[in-house]
Image (cartoon, rainbow, N blue to C red; front, side):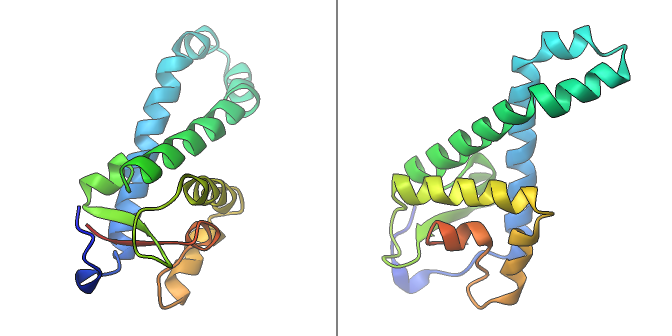
Length: 145
C-alpha cells in the first residue's frame, strides 16, 4: 500500500458504504457459524429466536466487531471490505499507519455510531474530511488505497 502523502485522496462515501456492507456480512457469517446450533435449536419458536438474537448474541457480536475492526485496521490498514473496495485507514495527523489504540477507539466509536441510529456515519457527509464519528474518535482518515 502506498505511503506517499502527495497522492492521497479521500475515499468516497459510496466506497466506504460498500466496505461497511461487506464487513458486516462477514461478521454476521462468523457469528452464525459460531452460534449455528443455538440458532437451529430455537428456529421453530420465533419468540425464542428473537430473545436469542437480542440477549445472547448482542454482546458476542459487538465484541467480534470491535476485535475485527481493531485488528484489521491496525495490522493491515484496512478491513477485508476496505481491501476489496481499495480504500484504507490512515492516521489523520501523520498520514501513516494507525496505532493499535487509535484503531481500538475507532472500532468502539463505530459501535456507538451504529447504536445511535447511524448518526455517527451521517456526520461524514457534512465535513470536509468526510470524517465519521469513528474517524474522529480514532483520529483517522479513510483514503483510496
